[in-house]
Image 1 (cartoon, rainbow, N blue to C red):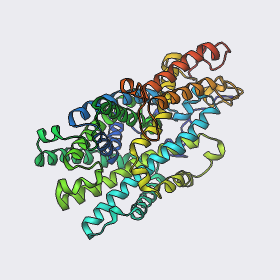
Image 2 (image 1 turned 45 degrees about the vertical axis):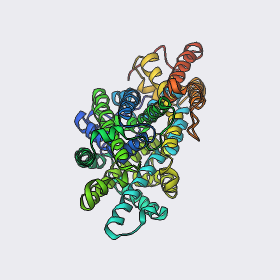
Image 3 (image 1 turned 90 degrees about the vertical axis):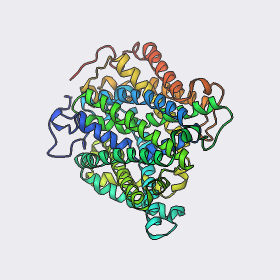
Image 4 (image 1 turned 180 degrees about the vertical axis):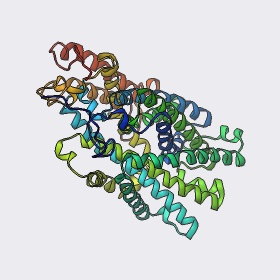
Length: 478
């Protein structure tokens, strides 16, 4: 069987609406444009929500340190894997992961990540949209929709419907929306900072206690750091798929530095200041007290629009992953496939408060899976394969591919992820978010990532390579 050819298919489908490798001419984002998209994704209410969550544990100065440390570590790892291999080869993220988990195993990983993580993130953004619109309506019409779960669910479902309309336009439309949202969100974030200090001095913010102070301040700081590590790692499934649309690996990597790390950190810090100044961790209630009725309503309305940008990007990335399941799935029309992906999003949006009020626990469940996966992929691609993949083997069936491992499954990689997840649970309980012994020194996500990477490295040397599987001895590019 011959290797699939990376011939131009832009005339048949939009760029990225196929699991075939993209040619450079088909990639729509350079460093500037992908940075703009990342900024628009980073500076949305989820970044402000992140800051509000950090303010639950620590004050302003400790929060700045926790955000820089946590985001700095996690966004660097996400920029390395899966962004660099996706941009280098133009392959969809889960197609690239066939070299790690096997041709069949990667599809299972994709389904779990898409249904449990990406759909949940898309729904969270829709619920944030609902909260923003409800606060706007309350101010304009003197209603009390912000306290109604039904109203918020209805607005969230409207956001899902609008996101579907934007999705039908493909990645070009996603990029155009991002180009509009990014600069305005930067202005809004900086404007919030000015308004905060117009009403509250730095000494007052710096002296403000956390919203829910803990006796053990060191433990509180580690919880704040962990929250930001998990928040940065949560970009892994979405940014990996978007990165294949960049024209060079360098553009993919540095766009994360400008967009995810810098913009997310600034927005989260502003969120911390707002939460401490106003005594609330909910970003959708900050704008009117800060800017007054007219300006506050305008800002809330635009933030709702920016959340749509993030929803579309998140959903597009998830749908791009689904395409790689089989030829039957690829034959489904893009609008229909988009609608199918949004079905679990709709279901989650029906329970808005259960999601919105448990943000930290939600991040914890994401990190249990993503942190070990990221560790395994970093070790596999950069250490074991020395940044080389065989495009041919990524697309061959299990019995013919070097990435077939054992019937299409690399059990070593799955064991590594499982042990990494167990490491996380041993340090931080994902249900009640209660830390266990040792967490105060090392956190949870980074140990899970390190354990998974180490187990994968060791298992590959002792089992996979000795069995002659996985293509580790003879990586080919082509």
